[in-house]
Length: 118
Length: 191
Image (cartoon, rainbow over all chains, first blue to last red; front, side):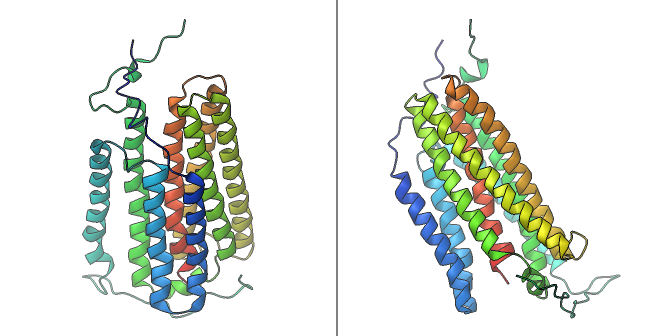
C-alpha cells in the first residue's frame, strides 16, 4: 500500500547549506545583542526587533522548509496569524485607554527596588 | 507483521497527514503564543515604567539560550536531512544533540529563575514579572514536551522506523525556537 508518495514532501527537495544559514543566524544574534548597547532608540528597535523578524523568516523558510511547502500550509498559518492580528486590534482600544466608566489609569512612578540587578 | 497506520495512506492535499497535523498544531500555537505576546506588547507600550522592571532580566543568559536554541534547530534540520537519506542512526544522533540543546536551555532557565526568585522578582511582584514567568514558563513546557517526543522519535529512527516523524518533530522544534526568537528581544533587550 503506498504511503502516499504524495507524501514524500515537497519532500525530495534540495537542501541548502544549513551550516551557512546557522552562521548567518548567529551573526544576526550578535548584532541584535550589540545594537541596543549603542543606546540609540531607533537603532535598538531595528537591531532587536527587525533582526528578530529576519531570523524568524530565515528559520521558517530554510529550516522549516516553508519556501518549498505546498500552499495549504501557508493558508493554515496565515489564517491563524490573521486571527492573532485581529486579537491585537480587538483588545488594543480597551488596553490603550487611559480611563473608562468606572476606572482610570494609574501609572506606577516608583521604580522597582534594586536587589543588585544584573 | 507491521501494519502502516492509515493516517499515512490518505492525503487530500498531497501533504503527508502527519506533517499536515503538525502544521495545524503549529498554527494553533501561533494564536496561543501570539495572543500572549500581543497582550504583553500592548501592556508594555502602555506602561513605560516596565522598562525598569525589565532591567533585572539576565540578557547574557537570554542571548546564550538563543544561541543554544538556534544551534539545536541546526541539529534537528540535519536530523531531518539524514532521515530523508534513510539514515536512521545518523538522524537519531542529531536528535540526541538537539535534546542536549534543550537540556542546556532548561538548565540556564532554571538558573535564571532561581536567581530572580532569590532576589524577590517573583510572579506576584508585578504584572511585568507575571508576563515574564508565564511566557517563559509556557515556552519551557513546550521545550520539555519537545524533548520527550524527540526522544521517542529518535528511539524509533535508530531502528529505521517511522523516519517521517523526524521532520514532524523538527517542525515543532523550529517553532519553539521561533517563539524564543521573539521572546528574547521583548523580555531581555527592550530595557
